[in-house]
Length: 451
Image (cartoon, rainbow, N blue to C red):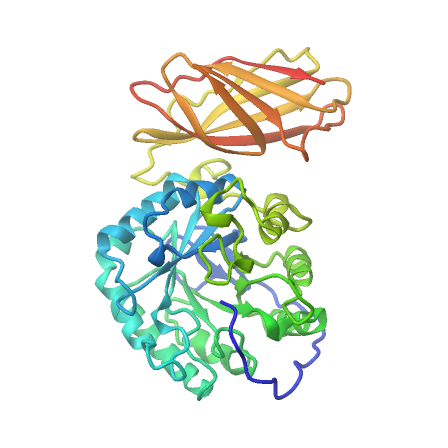
C-alpha cells in the first residue's frame, strides 16, 4: 500500500541494459517455477503476471470479486490474508480462495499481510511467524503448485533497521523448504516494500541462493519512491542485468505529481515481459487507489479504467495460464478439481458469411464452466459484430469479458466491445465468459452477423 516514507538518501544508480541467459532450475520443477528471470509453468510455458490485488482478509464476503477481476481480463490475483494480526483466514477459507481462483482461471498469489512494516509498526508479525502460518496451512496448499504462489510476507520490514530483512528472509525461505513446500515463493522488499535503502537490491543474490529449490521471485512495490521514469528503469535494469527474477507486486497511479509514474511501469513491464499486480480492486480507506467503487465492477474508477483498458494494460497484455487448458501442451493436465473441458468440440457458424464465430468450452467443473468464442471477419473488413446462440440444456451466462453480453431466456447475444469490433478481412478476435450448467453442457450452434 501507499506509505509515508523517509526522504531518499540517494538517487538510484543508472544501469546499462544487458540480459543474462535464462537457465532452467537444477531440479524437476513442480508447477510454477523460476527459469532465469522468467516465471514458467510446469510445461515450460512462460507466464507473465497481469493482475491486481484483492483485500480478501478484510472483505471475506466479497467473493464475487474473483469473477469480476477475471471478467476485466486479469490472469492473476494477489489475495491478502492474515494469520492473526487481523481475523485469521482459516484453512477452509484459504481452500475456498484457491477454488475461486481456479474456477475463474486465475493464478493465485497468496500473501500474509501480518508482516507489514515489521520493526517500525509494533503490531506487525515477523517473517518467522508468517512462515509458521503457511506451515499450518500446508495440508491445503500441497498439490496446488500449478495454481498458487506463496508470498511469504507483505512488506515485511519498515524503515527501521531495514538491514534485518536479509537474514529474516533467508531464514523464512529455508523454513518453508525444510517443511516440504515446493511452491514458487515470492519475497517482498523492505522499506514498506519500496526498497529505497536498496537492501533487497544489494542482497538479492544471498536471498536467492538460500532457496534449495531455486524457486524464489523477488517483488518490489512501487509508490512515491518511484515517481520518475528514470528511477523505475534504473531499478529494473539492475535486476535484469544481474539475471534476478522480479515482479512488481504492488503499484498505484499518479494521481498527483509526487506519486508513482504508472505509465512508465506499464510501458517497461510490457517491454520486458515483467509481471505486475496493481493495488487494488476495492476497499481502500483512501479510495483513490480503488479500481472499482464499492466493489461494483460496473463503476470503474480512473485508475481502474487505466490499468484494465489502457495501453500496456491488463486487457492488452494478459495471457491466461496454460494450466487452465486453453493452450496447454499435450503433457499438461487439468486440475483434479477442475475436470477437463468435456463437450468442447468447437461449433463454427457459416464460414461464407461476413463473419464467423466458433464456440468452445475451454474448461468446466461441477456446476460451472468457461466458454470461449472466436470471431473472424469474412472476405471484407467489418466494423462490428454480434454473436448469438441458444442453450438447449439450461446453461446460463454470468461474468464475461471482451464483449457485451445479454440473455433473454435461453438465448444469449454477445456484441463487440469498443476495442475489438473493427476487424480487417480474415482477422480474428475472441471473447470469453463464465457460466453455470446442470446435467449437460452441450455446445450450441452460433450465428455471427457483421455491421
